[in-house]
Amino acid sequence: MKNIITIIFLALAVVFGSNDLNAQGQGKGQEKKAEMKGKAKDLKEKVKGKSEEAKEKIKKGLDKADEEIEEVAEEVEEEIEEEVEKIKGPKNGKGGKGNAYGKNKGGLSGKEFGKLRSEEAKAKASAKRQELKDEIDKSEKSLKDSEDKVKAAKLKVEAQKKSGEISDDVAAKKDEAIAAAEAKLAEMKAKIAEKKKLLEDN
Image (cartoon, rainbow, N blue to C red; front, side, top):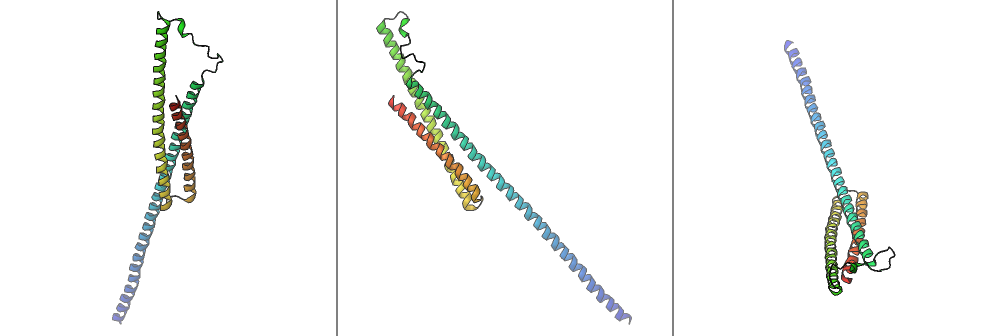
């Protein structure tokens, strides 16, 4: 009888003991599962953060390219207006009566003074012509740089669309900004062409 009670007692201990061990094993599994979920959530947040940073950088890059294009376009426009005003002449209504350059010849004869003035005018015109040519070269270089930036932005947006980094709405907005930049570049090209024509005509 003592042996039977001892055996029953041991059997109960084994049954209840294995349930405790099983419960402990399940608890550790759930802890690991919760830990893995936490890590997955952290990774997801990091990826989302990186994605937001990348979007912000692209937006800043496009904005900067737009600003540069606008600045260059404004500079070119101002330069063209100045050159047109120089060609048209003064607007003060004097009617081209002269500047009285010959009143004080500094001891030179009329012929000598005229020759000197002619040489000075030719040198001044040559210097202005060279200055205009340099401005055109600078504008063309700036235009080329801007075109390269716009091309790079366009390729980047296409790559992001294909990889799914950006949504269709964001891609459409970026495409619109790129199209606007391309239109400004076309305007800038036309203004540079006008300057070149002005240079060739003079």
